[in-house]
Image (cartoon, rainbow, N blue to C red; front, side, top):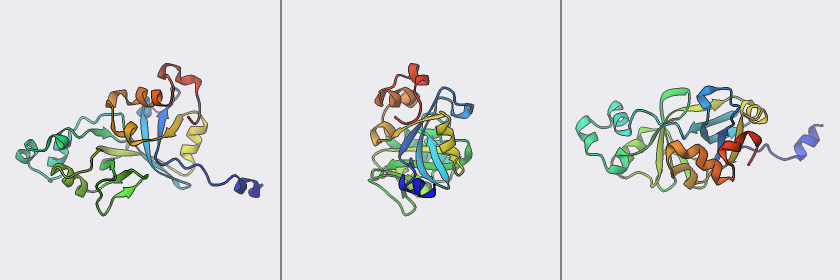
Amino acid sequence: MDSEKRDKGPAPYLENHFLIAMPGMRDERFSRSVIYLCAHSEEGAMGLIINQPQQMAFPDILVQLGILDQQEAIRLPREARELPVRNGGPVDRSRGFVLHTDDMMVESTMPVSEHICLTATVDMLRAISLGRGPRHAMMALGYAGWGAGQLEMEISENGWLTCPATPELLFEGNIERKYEGILAAIGIDAAHLSQFAGHA
């Protein structure tokens, strides 16, 4: 029996994939959510919700962290003023994460895929505030986490649809339309989603 399992190859880990909440999602915090999975292994998974806007704006976060004062925040480059801030998930909501393209990295940057990275230190926030940040970036407060086997169980119970992520789907488009937009990109009409299950 064990040898049969081994012959099937490694488990299909889903970092650099989107999790799209199915209509039957029991946890209201994730209703109609799209999550970008940053890490996934036999020990668990971690991701960021990318389609729930956060009320706090990026300049406010910089002031709160002491990176800038109010006067400096007013003079931020347009890209920094308009940097989208998401509610990344229910865990550790005071902690910030920046998902960004790989054209700018700092010492603590963690590559997620060939083109997408994750940084969770103020170095990246400071670079963005100075107009020296990556070409595409988004910030999230908090994250979504799963213990060993938990995400796999939720997927098997039809809680999530999964599909590979691309930088375009991740960074471009309207936040409020991400759910429908990513479904449309994989050929699914949100109105008919309950007919589908599993992997796209």
